[in-house]
Image (cartoon, rainbow, N blue to C red; front, side):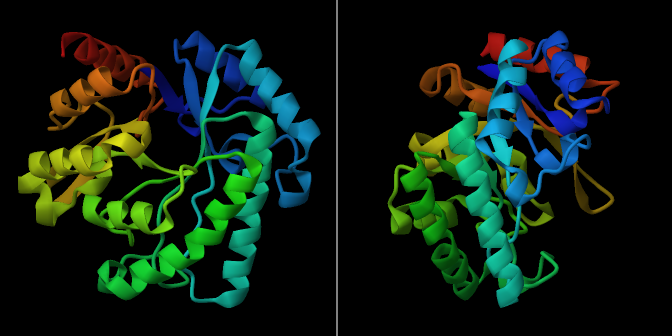
Amino acid sequence: MQLGIRIHDTAKLPFEERIAQVHQLGFTCGHLALSKVIDEFPITDEALTPGLAMYIKNVFAKNQVDIAVLGCYLNLANPNKKQQAETVRRYMAHIRFASWLGCGVVGTETGAPNETYAYTPECHTEEALHTFTKNLRPIVKYAQKMGVVVAIEPVYRHIVWNPACARKVLDEIDSPNLQIIFDPVNLLDVENYGDRQAVIQEAIELLGPDIAVVHLKDCAVREGRLLSMGCGLGEMDYVPVLKFMKEHKPFIHAVLEETKPENNQRVKHFMSRKYAEV
């Protein structure tokens, strides 16, 4: 695997210094959320030009760091038509930018059927899934035109909340430009935590061929809530996930989540050791 980090989880520095630091820390790829990493210049839709893309691309290349994911984590099921139209424009701007940037995928979660992007029982309805799929379809069509892959990240508390839902979206849209960001912990919640091994195995079986990127973090139930944390700090069994990666996804981008500047090296060494052992 090519082990990376969410760049906004590293120590806050000017952009070029921050990417240099990612290399110095021993990571070979990163998840780039423009608004969480860059303060020195605007990253509005109109600012996302070929020139800016090539500047950013050169900074990453100089430091031998791939852009695994260009994040655009906005709600594609917003019932507010004006906000939804703005969201679609933002996605299309990111897709164009990704085509010049040469990143792995444009990544997104899968929203909620409300303006606040909050979990409600309606998230898990067929109606919400239909709305999300309908709104995702033109995004993927645009990605096809631009030669870019969009990757959705299933999350238990969002609309695409389990492996079967994700498989349904993939099959209905039926495009090689739609793939999966596989975050095992995001498929879990208190309700299914006891069955976590079966949930993760189902995801590998149903989604495996379409997994483009892996997110790695840990989890544990504390006081009735599922908490996320850096790898090695919770109860996650990584063997099935790492074995799948090693056997089926050579050199896949694997991005650490929930790290902090003070523990990212410990987490990195933990995951590298675990991967070597499987």
